[in-house]
Length: 446
Image (cartoon, rainbow, N blue to C red; front, side):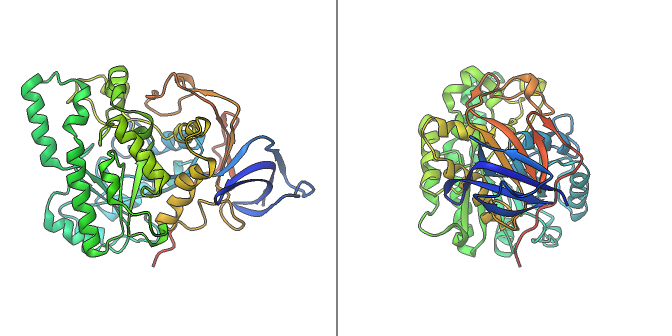
């Protein structure tokens, strides 16, 4: 069993930053202390001046396999994730074909077991007509059920109220939803088409996929979840108004309704459309600076519980199309931790806040077994950050299959120095060790 000793690290964990050492044995954290330097180990890593985080857990990514692998695949996007300090991901069902059956779900797990450098789980996809398949889902080995209550990339819109009620009243574990009101979006699209034809400016995107569309859908869904006592998680909150739907008066483990914010809704606002165009076309749309500020405030006061990416790569050529033809989504998973660390450098958030929202809370919220914290007996999912070594985003150091990022040209104040996945040092100073793959996540649910 290989042993690794990390010494002199500034450990960011459980609400504090403390100097210490950490001994890894095999896949697990064996010992945490202040005086472990005399311990024998196969490898000793001096982390003086660096920050040791739990590995980031991203609860919403689109890695495009099967069927859309010209955009990305589990292998390429998991490598990018690990290079960014993300050690575990939960991937969405809007692939081709969509993950509507247990057989297709099993195929994705088999692919990940062979190719993913990060730990992995996959959502089962809900449709208007696959209820029986959904109810076969093993909630101890599958992260949750995904419902698209607004059309996005793919053909997964669930718009039958009776079907929605059946899922919300019956599914025994976490339901995650994309919430945008389809009727509102269609009316807005027709209105802007009448004005501009097919040449709708990208700046109209947050007016078409409007704040009202988000509110109508998310408030309806939260109301239904509360009616049935559903364990419900609202993805990628994009408006300040929606933050009023969520509670911060009880511990996360006791919440039935939770929420996620995405890095792009914190980093960009509608003033960036002129510069970046369709590269920042997401669903839900990037909206106003006021919305951007309100989302951060809701994270700070615990109305919003986790930070993720909604990583969704498309090719450069696809993104060069006109407004209605350019697909929504963008690649973010390699740079999410660096972006949040930039907020730390700016004095807007603390280091324990980052660990809480990107590591601890996803583990708590999804009830992930032995991950998300730096604790003895937990898997050694770890990210070592050099907070004084800048990283410039440029094409030659982007690992996404699509080869581009909306953050190109940005220089972050930090660098991801090393990433351990279940004890395996998968990313070391700019190079990968792909000899050991990630593991399937398990969940402490009954």
